[in-house]
Amino acid sequence: MKLYTINTGFFKLDGGAMFGVVPKTIWNKINPADENNLCSWALRCLLIEDGNRLILVDNGNGDKQDAKFFSHYHLHGDDTLDKSLAKYGFHRDDITDVFLTHLHFDHCGGSIIREGDKLVPGFKNATFWSNAKHWEWAVKPNDREKASFLKENILPIQESGKLKFVEDWFDKSPDQPGWHTTVNGLLPSVRFSENISVRFVNGHTESMMLPQIQYKGRTIVFMADLLPSAGHIPIPYVMGYDMFPLTTMNEKKSFLKEAIENDYILFFEHDPVNECCNLQQTERGIRPKDLFKLEDI
Figure (cartoon, one colour):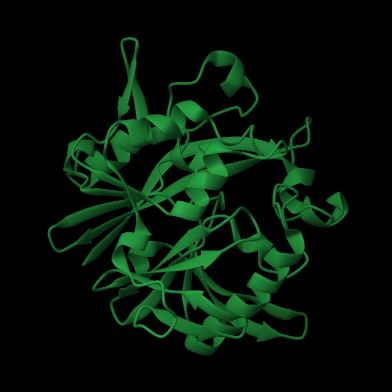
């Protein structure tokens, strides 16, 4: 197995929205805002070469929206998905699986591209993976979240016939293999491949999936939007975008306890500087210990 960081550029979001109830006097030291109160965030994906499978975890914003849409998010940087794949000798047509942690536009926008007046899969040889609960949540969105669930990113996946749900991989009975017990009770832990299992969390959005990867004798967890950056590790640092912030806080407490006990490596999707970290216990709670790049593992 090999892992590759796939950078697809940066975008900007309101700093207050990204840090929730945390005052700007505190969060601005973590990720300084511009004159419009916007902070830069990475669109960092993960490529997993696992036997004969080439699995892409999330795929950024894509580029099919109009100029008005992108004017709200100020895309910048020189990285693109195709350039990052090419850096390692890959092409988007080599991808066998696109694993979507959730269906917000900044995580799945590259799934579908425009060809003339048609919307078609951007990875023509890939299976696209979601889960039934999140798919239903996304295609029938609530009023608060629907601006993040864009039908042109989502519905063409199903129409292409290339959509599968991770439920296809496990028996839903908690008495069967594929489930484990956590401090929060029974949560599904789906084995996606020999080296990859999937965690489910529900604070940011319904049934978001976090790949957990066994790599070089270590456990790496792709944090998606449970912990979008190293700056979000303190328990109260919860995004205003989260649907259920108290659930997020409980999920963070549970996960961070497990992660420090087992020396997990955290891979950050949105941290503008830091790709990975491990953890340490401090007087102020669990905090980052070492910050490093994936290639340094």
